[in-house]
Length: 349
Image (cartoon, rainbow, N blue to C red; front, top):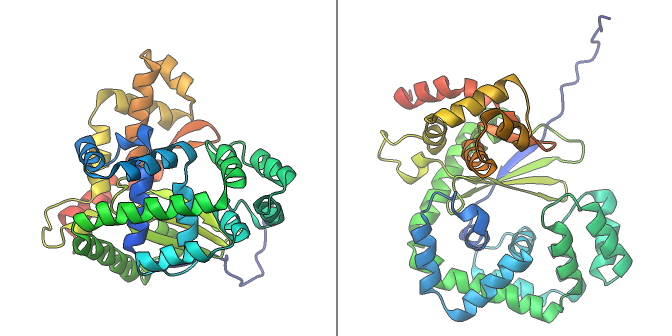
């Protein structure tokens, strides 16, 4: 049946905002070094992370072990969203002055406005609310155990831990790695995104900045916050706060090497590297024809599941493949845009 459109109302979208700070870089560095399964896929080599661990104090190592076990890097990110912190001392002072309820409420994940009363009741110590919050997040790989920890932990210890790990990483790692240089990278990338925001729709800007994430407007989300990061390249980290979707996105190569036009964009390199392998090309062909589970792909290729998983990680890091509802899907738009990305690299004007 034909539909006669008699409205002039445009489809609503979200507003994009951008922020950068060394404190985000600090918290994400803590998240990176404590993510053992993912650390092998990060741009910085494993030798870098080993060297970092060998250079820091035993006390900081102990706190990092707690981060890895309890996922308290999530607490740091949640807290950093509360104010526009410019210095580490302001952030530490803010944590120190929080009440027990406010601290736990902020650290608990936001999973939607209609569940926020449960989140508050969990923060004040209601066991039933904490259990309900854990049930609501059971599909998340770490939220249930993280929620249980936040609800049960002594608030004074939690403050001490968060302050020690954040201050320790900032003093012992960030300050020893040319922080002014990293700040310049982050600022340069943010400015390039602001410039492009005048020429792109919000959805197109998010897809371009993140290297391929398509984020369509949602009724409860009025803002998308883009935060450039260097330490977690090539990965994006996605998060939710009230009314806002957050993407901590990897900065582009051009922001790191502004005076070297022959250095290609990082995602361009990742995509062509990902395609430069027979097994991964066969996977691309299979996923072009249909969405498949890990077991489906393993059966089709007749190779070890661990090998298949490794290749899929590479395709995912290149933003050529994604997981939707438990199955692997080919991001066909990313594949189709490759010739245009190459043309942009060869002839940027």
